[in-house]
Amino acid sequence: MASTYSFDVTSNIDLPEVDNAVNQARKEIGQRFDFKGSIAAIDLDQKASTLTLTADDNFKLESVWDVLQTRLIKRSVPVKNMKREEIQAAAGSTVRQVITLQQGIPSDAAREIVKHLKDLKMKKVQAAIQADQIRVSSASKDELQAAMAALRAKDFGIALQFGNYRS
Image (cartoon, rainbow, N blue to C red; front, top):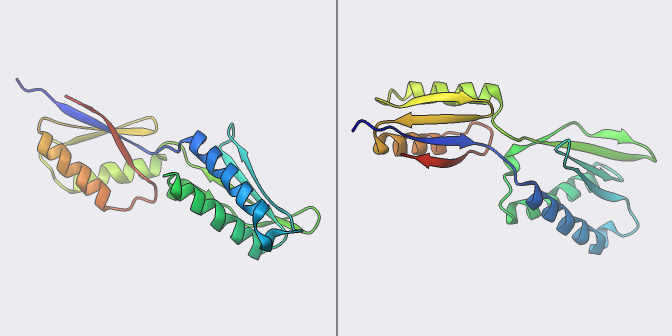
């Protein structure tokens, strides 16, 4: 009767939702008065999991990011999993910024999550890193729920999703 329960901790971005948000942001940028006659573009590369923002200057680039970020948040895409790189000068006196979409839990964050669970000293709770996700298991459902609450309370720099709850 000593069955174990488990759940998986993952961190993924839904690429079709990102694509929808990018299309909505492009449409809004095309209609806004402050972008008339200027260069402002958002390119999504789904294979490389990157977004490329292009604009006339840094101020307009930040405006493009604000529009995109608003659309992403409305579509429940975790903006926390997007790593903005440095703004670079591009051709034609424009600026460009590449944003990397983080799929899965990076190994350093995974180690930090496992260490956090061990530091809580919960009896019977075990965490194992499995590729880009973490499996948390225990004989007690209550301990698993407490572990889930503890992970939600701490900021690991990425958005965590909990799923695959098994008994």
